[in-house]
Length: 292
Image: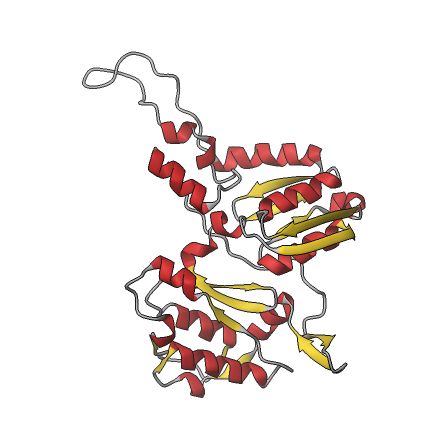
């Protein structure tokens, strides 16, 4: 039995103010910047749908989205199409920017998120969006699985940073939900120091940082949970009972007509097939599957 879980990614940790933050440019003037919570809040804005009623290529749809968003925000929200990911997904697929979009039977008003989701359904490759690092990344849906999301790499430098703040920044960078157990509040204030140079997977970075504070991570089906070692053991047992199939009884007798027992299932015996297992990087997983 194989599991193909897809994460529903929402940044759990984010800067508290649901508006664009301010940073200073070279000229000393305040320049609006975005964080994930501000982007998610903006996507809930209701707009008139008249500008989306006519057929248009996806590139024009994105321009219309930017135009509507700018009416409610101090700066343009970056929509980023991961063209390389789409090429890897289907080399013969039409270019995403040229894909025709026609939203039918629209109500007079709708949220930007609803319009965006309806448009993504019409792309030639099954698609999704991820809110991370203050932008909206448009990717093939296959790139939102655990294997891809938890194995993202990044550049970040933590020097005597509180653990909870460090995990908040990683969540903001990657769009992955990282939930801290409130019972570990004291440990979450432990300062950590680490430098990641685009060569460490997110799941490994979280495990290292949590270990520095004597905490553990629990792999949920769709997220990461940081808690105390004691509670991690209890939770892992509960999750295993919920999600992992019970092993069949030991084989007795022979198989085939007139035989008895249950045939052994090598997939069930492989811990890597559990939805609770740390996901292998996609390239390594493909090599292992090819060698099997």
